[in-house]
Length: 384
Image (cartoon, rainbow, N blue to C red; front, side):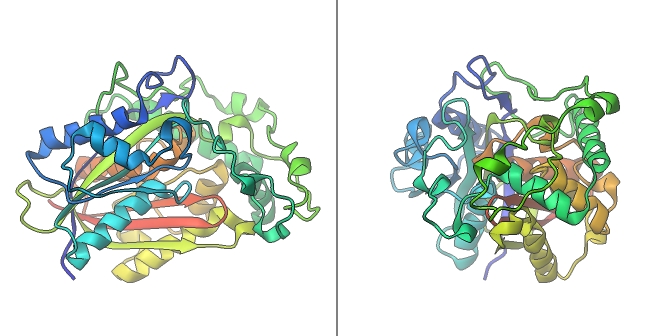
């Protein structure tokens, strides 16, 4: 197995998923093309031997094999195969993992991988899958919205509303500062007219968070069958959920000798499934697996990007794991900047590389978690 490197990784700013959002006028394939063009400008000429693209809602503007459409729109070589991948919220990182496996096996020398989600064009659950509402499935196999899982888990894990407020406030505060930090935004590519993160709410205060009512309690009745009649206290307010948004990210993955200097070496990659009843904890399982494969611990990590799927996930991580909070999500996270589902893993990969470069750190970790027991994690070593 050959060493695999991240030669570069770039991302769009995240735009609000509404008609007047900063990226809403751009097609999903244009979001991908802009990132491919940025990688070519930064890394020089290369001929990708695969394009692997994560995307969750593959219908409407994102239907019809979005990776193939993006390949054609970006002018990539005809011989380059394209793969559209859906692994829910981990899709963008799963796509990068698939590229890593292709390079490590010798199947390809260089690949583009990442993700895209235009939630203004293809709304959440917009593919109208039968799975989302099928009452004939056994309860354990029925779809449970991730925000409902977050409320159930927060109750079961003893995460308090005060803890949810604290992590939401920290995310907003760090994001507001980092938005103008050139080092932390070194790989964020202005796209269309959008130059910065559009979803950050710098006016957020501890008082406004404490006053916000829980927003998702009515879902318990709607999904009573999947919950088998279980009820629990609604805890998450809108501010404890990542804003829906548009965005894309792309990484250049390859073996040795491509030409440009790599930004990082991939030390380990791992994915994990999980119990759908505790769906948002699969990221923890993937993280534990990748650390074990690398023979390293959280204490060895100079920077960590832990996806703020909902406030529960990051609150549990900071409470239960021995990680220095000063090294976690240093530029803010999804609670402030938003979650363009299929793109998030690629965006956080780019964010991690910027954060490692900014602190001149050695090891970095990115962790994604999603609905119904989806988790992925990657550990990298920065080239100093």
